[in-house]
Length: 186
Image 1: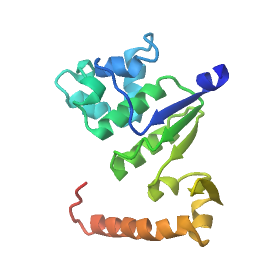
Image 2: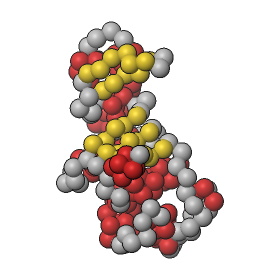
Image 3: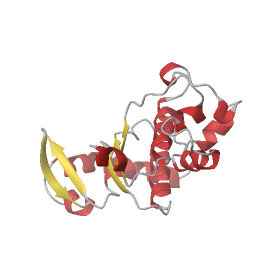
Image 4: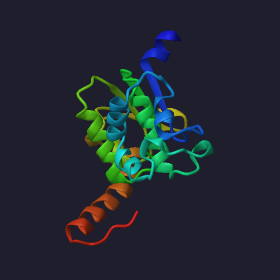
């Protein structure tokens, strides 16, 4: 258990935030974490700009369970909280569900480009997130239904292909709309 706790971090879909400042919520895992590390983690979690828009920045008090923040902001602060620990394995348990697709991509790209060796396990219902993974494991009715890359699974009959046909067509429409200069609202 000791090895697991030291090496694996988990970020839940519904994170718990304390009635403390944003900074204190991020560094609650270790009081010795300096402000630069907190801000780097918040930038990777795509929440630094949001925080800087608050009147008190990182000293903004978060209401009980984070009621003063949006769902996406809470998730991203929880991601920053885990990133400051620099664990080699992080499990994202649907913890990108409350952020828009653009922010989801930004966080995943920042993680890839962070220069740290880390294994990310991402549990998601969003195919556009799953398709970027090195390996996808499809769980259906509590069992492993398929394992493969996006290309492999999108070309074989099953749940993943069905979901990709629905979500992939929506992604294509979105890209077409953006290229045509249309407005997109989350």
